[in-house]
Length: 421
Image (cartoon, rainbow, N blue to C red):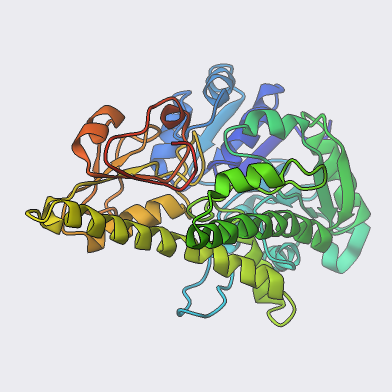
């Protein structure tokens, strides 16, 4: 194998598992992150995120000397960039545009240690054209090296896009089993990328070009977003018509060619809630259905909050001697999906924070996968389930964590956005 040392830039929910999988194959891996806490935690053989089985792999890789974490890049044979791709600030009603500042920062960080023969892969979910932009940034800094856009298969450095396609909570298994889309800027770039991933990937490595690889990941998540939007819109319609949406979907799904997803309080995470905007921002006049679905899902949290306001009014009507200050609201689940600690773009967290801003009484949260709340979550206190169950007057189920599925429905007013109670 032509890769003796691999560097992974960004040790978050994708970067750390990817680094660990390479290291588990007895390859030297250098993980790079700007977060000192993450670096120190990993170098102790521990992990700073919640992901089943990852802790054991990282512990073994560190103790055996195949994985280390650092703050600045060091020379390697392959560099995998797995950093965030957030949005630029936008006004209400404007289409959010992607912010590639973290990718640019990663390019500036690795450029000084690049050498002839290296491979650079962008794993971050990115808008179409981001891989070419990355190659340009690197070429502008390292004018002594030749890049694919200038020399095609004779370039000194190979560049490709290979988007991650894993499900949080199942990352370790899916990194190995899932097919990978390999989008090299040239045929040689793709060939070398396949060689690298075949170190641990048992699924097929399907070769295409960089732009198609970028669009493939965006398409997968946009399709999912549209399907969820249908379920969420259906739940709002059914609420208006006094129909049990959960029963309705169950009945409809008995048709052999129908598979409607389950509704919820919105869509979160740094994929489905984000990727469709990359398509919309690139082709705003054409992506009409994708844009509409995004709006449906983005507006669902406000609908949930309206249901909470109605619940408060109902409670005060039942107990006229009390005021809104006397009403305790419990939010069950803050992560963007069940059984993980990832709060990125979480509609549940957004709902809880908005309730805490507007409600004059106590707001408590039950989130079994985190130990503390960040400083931007004000006026919310973490509770254990048993205490929230007895202390709260209004119970808002936002995430169907396994702990909640085995619990009985709390006493009081219940708003169940996941249909488990």
